[in-house]
Length: 264
Image (cartoon, rainbow, N blue to C red; front, side, top):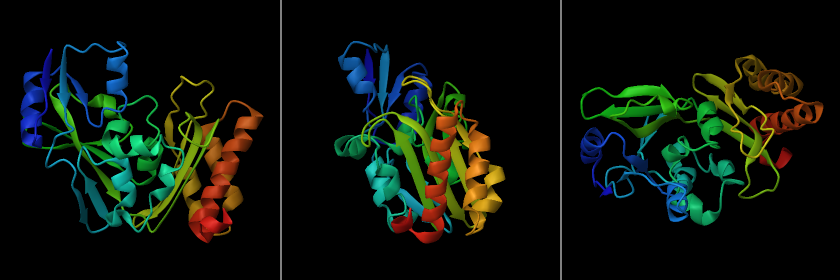
């Protein structure tokens, strides 16, 4: 087995071109346990954890670009995204130790990608590149599986929100699969909201759904009821209890956006 640990993005792209079938890992929080348990036996491994130029967080106007190995905890602490604006996404996401290792970009390649709903609400894009092309490719964050064999995800591009809210439902508060989640943001280009399709089993990945019908209600401080109804309509939960749960998440998000966390 070839094990490659490049130190620059350029050398990582060259390695990807040489070994297009290699297993790519960032923080290794999912890959390493699977390999240790013998559940995953890749022929080759391309480890991005050593990228010296891969952990940058660069602000440009009302957008922020994050390198491919920016850790989840580091992203949540980043002032470039607004003071503590993503702290909410840490609620229930893994354990503190895993948050310090897991990468924001890498989470998009997991099933389920719990943070995809957050990044979708933040108008996020996945940046892909190849050693065979000088041009980067911009993809929706929900299409990580659309990378070409010689491409790597070399970062994320996110909008900086004026206000942000994220609510999730799980069987327990910490380190449990997300059954449903709603994320909402007020951006320079207008409000955005996203929801995950309700997961009916612990091994089914919830699909991230953008909620354009909820946008007018999110912009309206008095639009809580309409926002909840639009989010539920987009998610189309399978049962009354699931619809009530998603509506409650949406209502809390609307209150956080307009009234702050104390009123959620």
